[in-house]
Image (cartoon, rainbow, N blue to C red):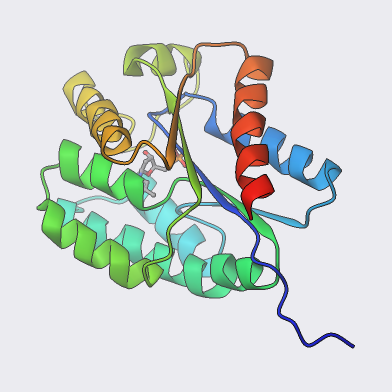
Length: 211
Ligand code: TMP
């Protein structure tokens, strides 16, 4: 019997403002990876663990949360997710597809809420142990278009922030993408779902071919 460790799977993160179709594209990529014979773990931030589920509920509905308190809550959820789900999955050779990661904290708590970026970077690194994804897919669109797609659904505490807040979030993502163009794939989220799925698959296949 071989004692070689399983090859590490690839780690793909989806980011973007509300209503950009992240969950749809996460599901499409997960299915494509599975169809190609990969073991896949699909997960979400905040969520994916009992801690993450409690944090999800708390940040969406809680009262009196300060920006710094939010920063700690998202990173508490993240630490639990990385330690108990993402890292073990990658170590056992699974590909991991995750809806949001550290880049959301930089965009929402940093760019939009104004929390110090060095503090955010430190906490993000503590929570993840420095684990970085192979690919970050940014589904970019103007926030008002994203909210147009969500018309008729109840909005949560963060979604209810004003349009300037959401514009700063979008800008925060675009600046992060510019700083690390090899890792980020920026796509126009107003393109048809299948076109986006194909562009994502092209990048994922290229990275899989290199691993
Ligand atoms: P969503 O999964 O429905 O997009 O909800 C998650 C919400 O939490 C969304 O408004 C973005 C926000 N968020 C942050 O503000 N910071 C973070 O670090 C993460 C992961 C999410």
